[in-house]
Image (tube, rainbow, N blue to C red; front, side, top):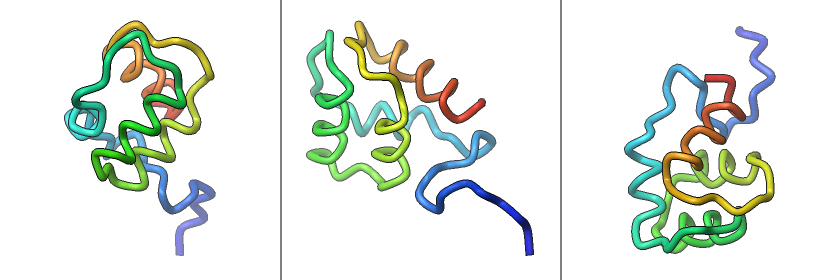
Length: 78
């Protein structure tokens, strides 16, 4: 059995799907806080792994989807 310490809900960097993040954030107006990103993802019935990834990014105002994607990639170590 692998000794993977990653929480079950978090996507691994090699399986991260930026398109799924885009779908989770559809309809969001930028700039947006981390809380707004999480709320929108939940409203859009995003996978728990996406919500968990968003919860792990820094609290700040994100100017656009590209900034969010970069923050998630950094958080996942991708």
